[in-house]
Length: 86
Image (cartoon, rainbow, N blue to C red; front, side):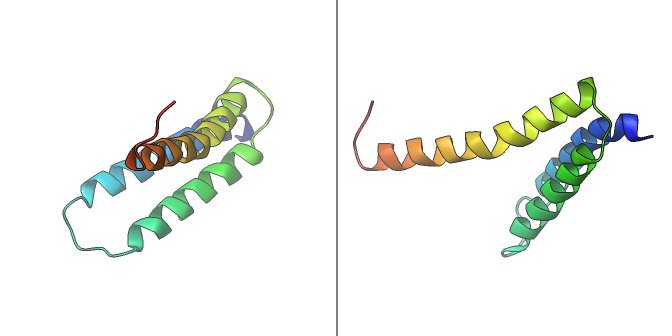
């Protein structure tokens, strides 16, 4: 079973995205932050406890790329708002 925890990690991330997409247009306040945090935390735990292999590497790569990509997006957005560029 531990062999598939990496795949479960990816599935948890997909379910988290689907839950957030189903809540678009509804007044949920800051609940979306909790949904993302719980989904990401559960996915990280599933990836951490999976046995070494292909799915663990893929899920770990996704779990690293998501926050790094988000930070890069925010920095580029802020740079664009200031009128600067690269």
